[in-house]
Image (cartoon, rainbow, N blue to C red; front, side, top):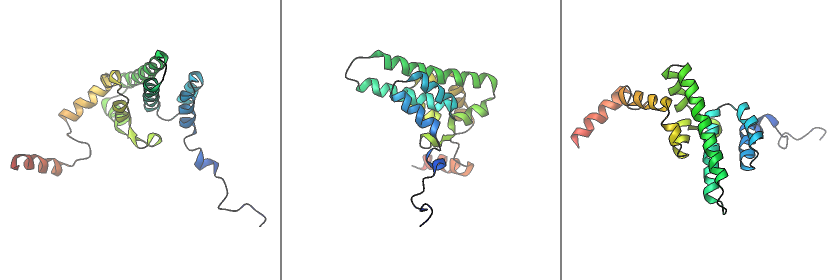
Length: 163
């Protein structure tokens, strides 16, 4: 065989599809926060990335043997960074774009939305942000569930009264 075997050929494009994300998480875990900020800025979804970093740092602080409040401080910094980004987006855009931003699933983090990431990270300040509150208001007053059709909602409504 003269050329490389097709089965053993390394595809750099496929293995580094989310390189900025992986390097960002790696830098956060190694406590290289200045370098992590560079990769955070280069990533696709900075709100979800900062919430993920907040979640990682909170978990790291809880499992740490030493009482190090620096991890909680950094976790709060990342959470406030996500809050500031959402606040800027909310002030400059309409509510529909914010709703999409919060509910669209992010492939990098395993098909989880920014709102789900905030809930799993226990990011109370983020959830109390005006952007999230507008999403909750639109869900409460306009739509019960984004995935349900009109007929499904009617069916569940009548089913509730039968049983």
